[in-house]
Length: 474
Image 1: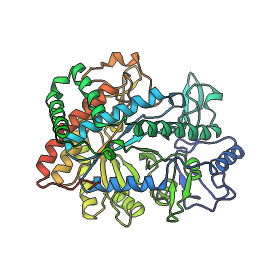
Image 2: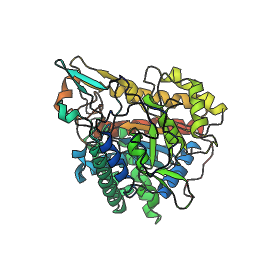
Image 3: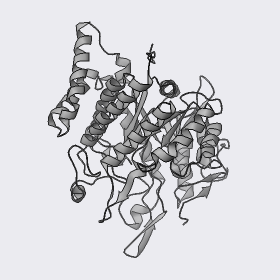
Image 4: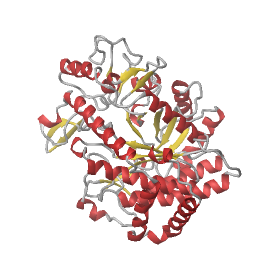
């Protein structure tokens, strides 16, 4: 096994079904792909996936691209969040509604503070695979394949569990379908209504140790809603009921099998999710992941870590959005709190000079991960917040738009990241450390972050916006 699990996908490999033409990404290096032990079984699964209905529709992807175009113009804000790695046993109404509730609460806070619509995109219904720094893991002298997410193998450290199983791709499809059906039912039933969501926020303000800090903002939202009701006006339900799904397009067997040609336009769409992104480990320009993303019409994102050069960023723009279409390409920076103020400005300046029309989003999670003395991976809430602040500071200084945040979170009361209003201490991490991979913010920490980002966002907007901008639904 190679440490980076790099493979070369060819037209004769199981990635290409017999009835499918050679894809643009075949024959290119593909990092982070499982070493499937049974290629015949993989071929059968991929062929079956090609016959199944799409999980999302091309028109929905187009709508999200339009919404992200507004973010690129500074007329909206993107909130993207959810699990680090979804698991099959967490596909339940309670688990999904808990995550959705947290994201909707955050969106309500950010909508009011920024005075712009918030585009809500979940890291869900497809985030079942994870890249790893090594393709194997050794424990007590025994070496087995690394856990790559439920889409590939199991977390238990046994030969049977860690064996990559192609049938798990089918389980991934059905789990994603069930999740999307639940989300659509919740949203259609008014779960995202602004008044209902704000009542949840008021409960949080009353019970949070940091609640007094947010009390003034909560009162302002109350006053605004009361004024609208007195005027006989209610918030536009189109704003509150829209919700989109995204995930990292890591497993090319799966993503390719769910790519469909839109009957309206003849364009290709990855129907596994509305938006897909390329990770820090798979963004090589001559690689299969970039070629795949270039071949579909979905909105696509790219994670940019501290090693990203300005030229690499510009080359990604040319490869993925040569027509400079707003909303097509999102750059998700993950620099770390200690480096964001030093490394991000040059990337933004070069993109501005090239008129790249990208959405700039901050991932304050991945650059701030460290291990405790006991070996637990965690993140400090203050580091997460500091990277967000640095992200806003950079964009404010350059006159560009800080377009959004991309956060790993859960609606459960886990103890995986330290700090926050309900402060979690390092020695409390083992109380409820439940993540399948990386540490997530719990509900309280997520809402803490939303209120604090709202304060930063409001200050930034007041300084940068001298005239009103039209809303994206006007």
